Length: 62
Image (cartoon, rainbow, N blue to C red):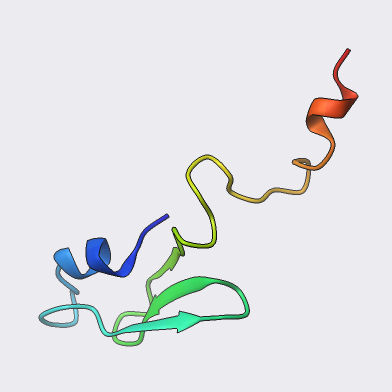
């Protein structure tokens, strides 16, 4: 999970810095030069990456 400032600190292998595009549907950040993608830190907070089994985990315990 990244934010744009952190992504721009790393060089793009296609030259200089990444050219970022934010996808508001999937909430991912994509470099239009190299097509690398990152999960948006604003939408996916730390330790809350979605997965198929995440719902009702705590309620099923016990």
